[in-house]
Length: 238
Image (cartoon, rainbow, N blue to C red; front, side, top):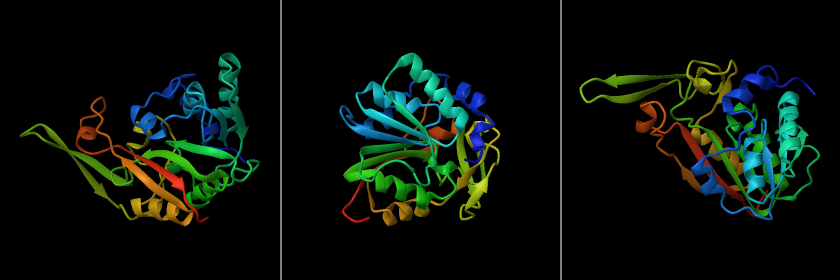
């Protein structure tokens, strides 16, 4: 299996997200809801933050991650905490080795924008979901994190405005502001309609969108949403 981008920065990423920590995100938790007794797949799970949260809520979790080094970290944390999480090194494009219709739900937290082919990824998610199964994902907001964005400060009322350019230029980028400048890795910018169309083609029906204000971050994220949260479910058509 080819080296994953995050193999090069696994140690830095682990520290950045809180080594061995459990995900704490109120909006994500609300959209996921009760998961006790459910089979849940954590797609592109990194070192396991969201997998540990789901397992702590009673889910039987399988985490899939391309980076060998991040999988090793996740397994190390599992050895110490013993939450019953199964971690697999695998590609989100295919979710190879996971059976059709084997999960009640799936999550992909802050990773779908890092995956080159979003169509293949969401089609694989739909494949492993049972009919009616749910999928929650979180991405950097495609409308406000684009290849040419910046902040303008209105000194009259001390407010901040977000400027957006090159929104329709889809593809890989690694410009300033991505990952809060903390990691030397890029992502794939796509328009909002590209994400919606990919979900539709995969037979996934959107149930809810969230764009929370973030008062604990930079002032601009009080004015415009930094993140987009989506909950959808597998419909009757695949």
